[in-house]
Each structure stands twice: as C-alpha cells, then as structure tokens.
Image (cartoon, rainbow, N blue to C red; front, side, top):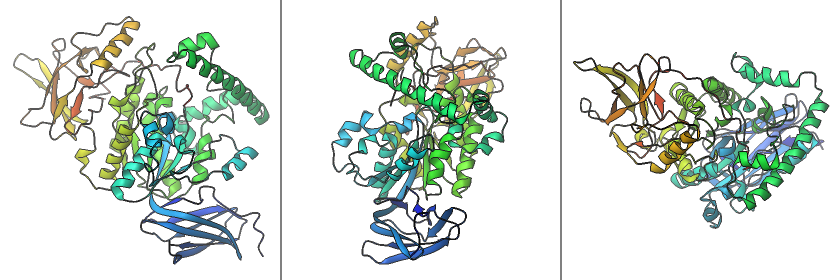
Length: 563
C-alpha cells in the first residue's frame, strides 16, 4: 500500500461543494513528487461520469475533469496510488463565484438590514452554498490546523449568518434565475488594500504600486520575524481589549462616533504595526487566502473594494488592473469576469470633503471602460450617512446579479442592467459668446429622471456647515469650471438635443467659457439623476486634465469598527 501521509486534497474540496458547470473542473492538492493521483466523478445514480489522473510535480498535483451540466447529488473519489483516500459527497454542479474585497463584501448576512428575515426562512437559501477561505493572515501551525476545518456550507449550516450578505443575495437571485445551485467562495477581509491580494511582482512592476512594498519594507527594516510577530501579537491583545470596551460603550451609547469613543477609551491601535504577521501587509492575503484556493474553477469574481486605497486614489486604476491581470494569469483565464462595485457616497460626519472617493470612483469607471470583461455596478446612491458600512445589501447584490445576467450570461439587455455613464461632450456657444457644455451618456437611450434626495442634501449641508462652509442655493450636483479651475454650481437641462434623450446640457452664469463639467463630485451628498432603468447616473468629470484638480487628502479613520 502507498503511504498517504504526504498526500492531501486542497481544503476547498469537501462534501457539499459546488463545482462550476460546463467548464473543466480543476482538482488539486499536495503530494510527493512523482506520485500518481486519480479522480473519478459519479452522478446521483452512482454512474461514472468521468475520470482522470495526474503525476505530482514537486509537492503539488493538479488534474482536470471533463465539463458537466448542472446537477446535484454527485460524488468525487480521489485516489493516491493504489489507495482510495478521499471521498466527497453531495456535490452540486452549478455556478461558482468568488466574493472578494474588504469589509463591505465581508459584511455578514446576520448584520445586514435584510438578514434577520432571510435567516428566519429555512428555505430561503436552499440553492446557495458557501465556502469561506481560511481567514488567518499568517502561516503558522494554527493556520494549517484551522484550514483543515474549513468546508462548504449549505443553508442548513448554523454558521449561515456569517456568510457575506452581498455574496448571498447575489447567489440567491442567480440561482433562481438560472435554476441551478450557486456556490460562493468568500475571500475577503475588512480594511484591506487591493495590494494585499496580489503577488509581489505585480506591485514591483509599477513605480506607483511599488510604494506599497517600499513603505512596508521601510517600516519593518531591521526587525526579525520573531520581533515582528511579537509586536503584532501584543497589538492584537491591546486591540481586543479596546473592542471589548467599545462594545460595552456602544450598549450604553448606541451610535457613539469614533472620535467620541476614542476620547473615552483612548486611541484605538488599529490597524496595528506593519509586520509580516499583519494581514494588511502587501501580498499577505494573496499568500494566505488566494493561493490556497487556486486554481479552483470559477465562473467569475464579485469585487467590492477601494475604500482602503483612498490614500492613493489616483493609482487605483493601475492597482486594480494589476490585480485583475494577476488573478487571470493564475486562474489561466484571460477573460475571467469581474463584476465590481463602484464606491457609494460616504463621508464621516466630522471630516472635510476630501474628494478622494471621487477619484477612486473615477478610477473604477476607467477600469470598467478599459479592461475587457470588467463591469461596474452602480452603488452611488446606496451609501449610509457617516457610516462606511451601508447595512442594506440586497439592492446592491441584485444590481450585481442583473449586471452578471446581462454581461456574463447575456440573458437580459445591457441597458436594463448598466448605469448611465458619461461618454463625450462638446461646448456650444450662442451669439453672445456664452458657452454651455453638451454631454452625451451611454446606457441612457430613454433619457433621465430627477429624483428628490432631501435627506442626503440636508446631511450634506450639515457636514459642510461643520467645516465652516455654506452650500450654495444654486446647488444641483452639477458644476462647471473655466480656465481659472474654480467650480461653480451649474444649471442643467435633460435631453432634447437633436431629439436625443441621452444628453444633458449644463451652464453657469458665472462661467461664460466653460472648460469642464462634473456631477456628484463629493464624497457624500445627494444623488438625484437616474436613468429610466432606475439606476443612478455614474458620477464623473468631463476632463480630468483641465478640471481644476484639487489636492486630496483622506480620512485617518478607515474601516475600523468591527463588522
């Protein structure tokens, strides 16, 4: 008999797993060099569907099984040499999506607005299954022991409340629309930069992205691994104590602000020292999470992230593009779909309007426009006042699912799922020389509608007042600027240019020769312009090179409050 001590199947393979239908299924794990690994797949009747074998190279093995249609009740038997080693049952073939990003993707079903009602229904998620990648940011012995305990969960699992709310609602609607089981792989961590989810060489290849590495290396220079680990362990003890105190304070004062909490409890130590053990380090979660599930066969990626890269907003397009290139290379799929979320309105009440999220949104829109099979889901109108974690997740998730059905599955028209977005503009002058900017938009063939957003408008005015600013009575959300780069509120008129409904004209009496226009150029504020498909107009500026680029800063408090 063959010694099986050196053999394993990757932890993501377990009972109840979902395998991607209609694509070759990658099965993989560890084994000694030269070992022969075989796999057999059976349907619900016990009939052999396919089989294959592979020889391990180095300490890894990988084989692929032939594509299968949607079905349930399957069994996978993986053999090492002449021994039957692993048998996995209750396998479903359906759709598999990875839910990646930071805390708004991580945000748990049990904590979202719609969660309690969903969890009370024992049949609500019957066609959804979930696998959470081992969530430990450092590979010690505990890491490997914990990874062995990970497994695919069904709706019957007592842990279903901890599933990603966005991932769950996306999968539930997709399962209904496609009539098959949908599996979600949770691979997310609150507060993380995209740089944590990438291989080192993709950061090194660009001068701006390399700063993520050099800043980390400068902070850890001269420190041994043991010293770095101890510093991080000490931080975790301190942070856990602070969080316990905060929880008690919250019970006494629900809604207490971060600033108020720190006045009472002292400064929160998050995110801890830069350290080889800190999960926020560059490349750390690629190593501890992404690499552990590679190359599990996927349909696509759901991505909700960008908040923690707001300190380098102008580099976000390059950063995200590098991540997409990295993952597509590793998964061996140059067209792997990414359905992403554009950041919603957000600003902490006491902060200035740094306008850094405006630039991140712009960079996200650029990624969607320039990278094949990357699509952007509008969430502009879904932000929550003074809270980085909007608690209602179902609307956003279902917008993402509509976008996937339109772009990935091509089941509905794109116009039903895509938000209106800026396409082009030209300046028109009347006989007196007064100029107006005529803008044309994609995904708005039937034109626009104006909605009142008085609540956010009042919140916006309140936040500006705290900064000593007065919001103009002429405020519309649209602005124009001339050669001096000063922005003024603009009047606007919807549609009607040459009979086209997908146009908007803007002007200001204070700018006779406008060079640029913008809309929604604030971190948090009212959202009033919608396409006739019900999706909000994507915020934009018409010319970043001539648009009075103001210097941006960022909030020093970021994710912070425990999800």
